[in-house]
Image (cartoon, rainbow, N blue to C red; front, side, top):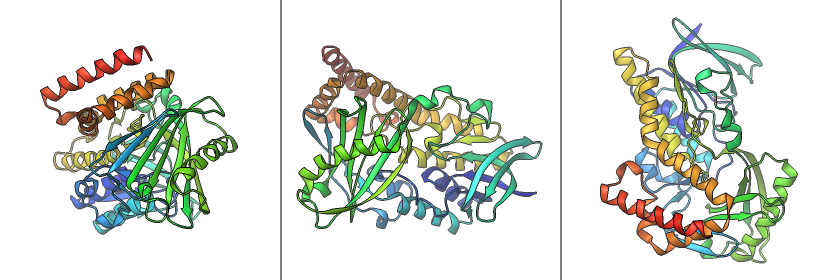
Length: 398
């Protein structure tokens, strides 16, 4: 049977980063990617946090724009904030670039390779996959496996350690239009990342919507909690889009490319490591429930997986426990708090205004929330707790 040291399933930011950094460290690596072209079917606003390219050694050429401003909008008001600045790109460019670097380091990237199952034997982990180009089932044995298939990952039957009944509760149905105006939108459109939070007048459900500018188009989309059919989801976006057009490109004709998929916006998966198998990125539920973003977290889990596999190769130990410790230490408290916060806000949408008004009025508070919690000083923690108490008190009367 064919064998490798490290097998990665999925070539998004998590899988691509894991493959690149593992191969660079001398670990033989194979990646199974279900799509024919890496990144081509990813529905994502593709916003990157400040410094992302430097953190992961990526070229600035993938960045479309550097919007210095973020707005958070409700039905009542729009609140504005200054960013680092952030960056925008597309998943084709981001995932494709990382994949190309992984290949350059020696990783074997196999497209049209659909993961089917895994089982363990005394020599490692045997993964079965479908080669959809050849129309054949194949198997490969690896010493370690990293599962990074995104929000569509179905892990309940892969390993009991990964079962998570609440996973379905966190699924968000998303639709996005890539809007190509025939003439440029107003200047402000290319300098701002927009997030919108409101109760839908069509369905009554809470909507998270966005507008992220790119070089030649605007990514305009939304997500909502229930799993609904395409026609109803499209109706929601068709209600939202004219309101964006009226502000940013009034009276301008445009063409549209439609994209749709599932995202995740609940609690992180409790178990993400089991006997030489690790789960990363969105498949691990590492998504900020308040914004729907998880690219940075995904890429970092790829880094942690590669580091654990490299260390395990040296001393012949299972890398999964070290990977799980690093990932949970870095992200779990923050993401669990964000998921609880989102549920709290959704119960009474007026609370969004309370929070956004406080963030706009206290720039230090807004700035700290953009940083990793592990970087906070004791004084900063005390300040954040005070701000949280202030918000809780005001929200109770909203």
